Image (cartoon, rainbow, N blue to C red; front, side, top):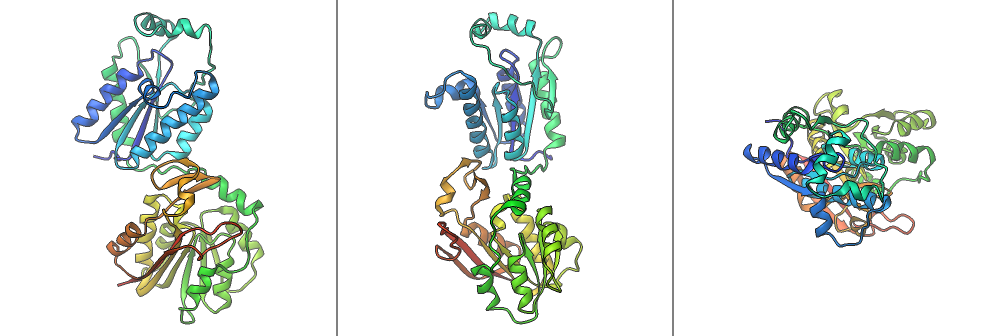
Length: 383
């Protein structure tokens, strides 16, 4: 079975399109196949959550995002989540696609005449809508659009969604706005050019020369520092702008800058050919799945006894409680961050063939301006 256990299915459509009924049928299908499933209905959630939202467009926008943040949080813990809610605003469609892992947007299309007919026997919403019209947006690119009327029954619509899920949701990592943010940041941001305290700490341990890769090298500040000390350095980053600027502006000999993540870069290299993998403040810009693939790639790339040096923001940092909640460890405050649990990270490294030689988790390691975060520093040796 290919279905990813961390999937959010948002079933939307106008009032009386049959969202709740289809969602219930879909939940039954998912449960019958032995998978965990949580169903969140918009009407139920509005009753459960504090009664602070009205029915105008702005309140509906805020409430819709709240629904999807809750769904994302529940899904991140290994559940398929179904949300049935109208919430048809382009702003919310974009947020859902960009910030929720494995997002599936299902639009139930039902003609107005049919919806009005159904509504007469249920909520009586269409009489109210005449008094307070909301300008909803029809999704232009849903994952799946279903004509949920005529000969198509709710159970048949649910079966269509199930078939789609089986084929299309094995892996689908959302960008979470990272590409746009980091490309803009390296074009316009204020970025230090001096080496980080972590780079200075790592350099003090290294014999010269070593062959190393700087993961998430950014503007190349640490790559340049290691290079100046005699190390053979490759800086990699997923930001095209960062790599382009580095290749144009950094003239130090011997540094290679490539646009890639570590998994992609490792595929182009001889396994066991590097002495050091260095990652400062890049792990917490990755999803959990990307973190895992990075650790696996580091294990392949490093020589026996080679070292993986990591510095990342801790879940104990105050920033972990700020901004929009995506999951227990994920927030968006200015940009996406996923905060690390030192126990989980060290266990994951150990399971991939690393010995944890040192682990520090405290403030004072990476101060910048008014920010002094709690960070995790790990030195892991391949065994």
